[in-house]
Length: 184
Image 1 (cartoon, helix red, strand yellow):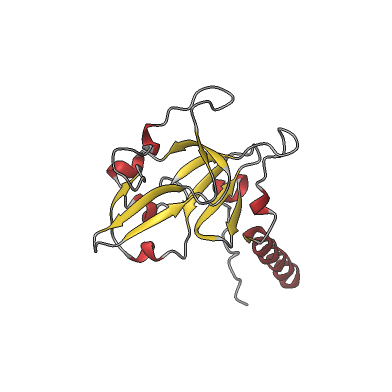
Image 2 (cartoon, one colour):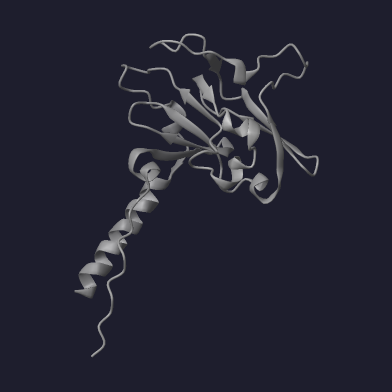
């Protein structure tokens, strides 16, 4: 009789435990990690073609007229009300990503929110956007406006036409439970 070793436990990451992952059909370039406090971390989508290329730099001054736009990296946000934060709309450009092959990609916010911070690590290591997407390679942190009350900071875009990955994870988790019950 051969005994099988139990498989090691599969622990979820802190991102999976603390954030809900959202994608919006109208802006497939980015994914959003929503914390229960309402703060949203903006990431590059895992299906974006930039992940197959080499990134040379990320530009935060996204104005068509150079020298006239607002450099997102220089924004200073202060206080509880996030004063000084740039107001973003769904079509507002967050950054422009330049690849070594000469191609450029404009990344848009996709939701109405206030820009709290951009990822300063991307200045020195723009390849973090590919190698550590969920952790050190995020694009920006934004805060959507409160809708009905301060506790409800879920953007309306997340409620309409949204593909939520939690449903897939829950289905996967219930399948694992069924498998362990059947194995007993």
